Length: 186
Image (tube, rainbow, N blue to C red):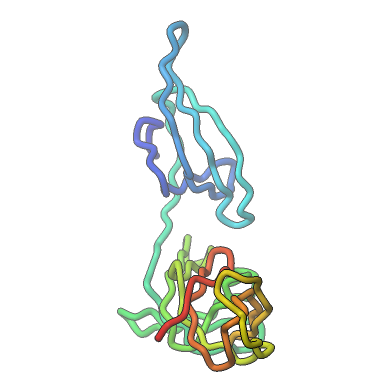
């Protein structure tokens, strides 16, 4: 249990049997009436964001979420197998938990896996990853970086938009949050 005065960004709360992560919070002391805390909470499992107001000093139940650095090893049916880098223990994580992050996941890549009571909640990739383009249409003479974009397939099978001058077998940096092209890697 914690008080609303102890709230901070990233803290995970257990409200009505669901896990909610604090995205932002603000202590408000109006001229009239008691103080309160205005929060923006994100559901850990579904990603839904809601606004919620608490009276100041009210007790809220915190959830114990364990975040560990893990390494992705291989895919086994509907599971993705990760290895804890400290204990070398292998953990299968269902496809539903890995979700959209699977588009940018390569073998031996590091990720943060969050668990609650032994059950995996989500997989957090680094902000950007370096991947090789396996196929894209050839660029034409005169294509410049300020021009348009074209689709390109990455080594993981994901498709992103890249500038016209990018060719096959080029190593590029990709933002894992929105799948955008960030630049070439020499």
